Length: 349
Image 1 (cartoon, rainbow, N blue to C red):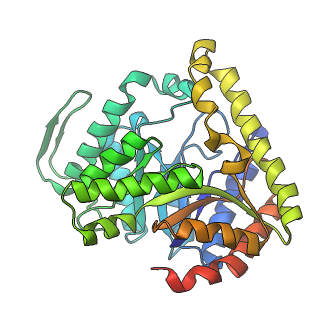
Image 2 (cartoon, rainbow, N blue to C red; image 1 turned 135 degrees about the horizontal axis):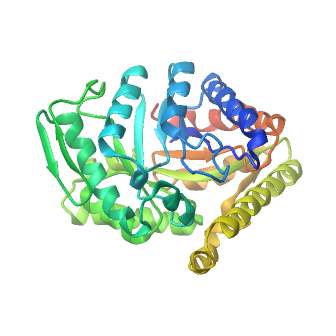
């Protein structure tokens, strides 16, 4: 199982943006230094939940400061991007990184309606735009003389430059939350990134993913290859003792949830906010399932249960909400020094 750092740093006000963004770059360099396998970048706009907002531009800075780690997107909000522009940007990043890019896609946020309004995109178009964008990306990277006429874009491209570094193109992985989306990706034999769920739900989703791939005609080797490229997201805080990790982690987790919740109430309309009430009651948003915290020994024990699921890797969000740089750095170092070595023998690096 691979271990990666999800850089999703919160900045509560514009006055803290510079510090938080530059801290995130420092964290990217530290992650490679400590032996993590990859770095993931997110995308949110206008609320400071993800301080750098634009993961494509930020990825350029990350690949310039690293040499070994993969750099993935968890995930690009596809409905907010023009597919040709995105294809060019990813192709450039793929060259600059010498093939270290993983393209994680999603339709766009299911919670922050204000992001769609800011980009002038109808929320109802998000899924359709995602599907069409993914189709155009692959064709743009692999086809000369491309002509595409679709629901949202009519495109003519003589040849996309620069040519992508990876052959045939950077991997595209869909971020999913629901069982239906998981099954649909399994039918296509596509790897997934699964959002935070309770471990029993995660286990069930991947059991169904394997079964659906097999029922769709994929052999055992193909199923395991796809599983090795699947990822799940977890929030993790490590400290010297369980008590210290609880003190740091619980406050940071609740601080993060408070910022997100307050911002949504302020920027969504009352009708939009009301539509979220059922989903926000999902157990995956509770402390019990939303945060792994403890001493290195405690965290190892919890990760061993995840390792049994046969998933390719963990996307780990370390710096939660208002967590200080010092607490974050300590957590990263403890994880690298006392958790990673416990799993290295079974990892495919």
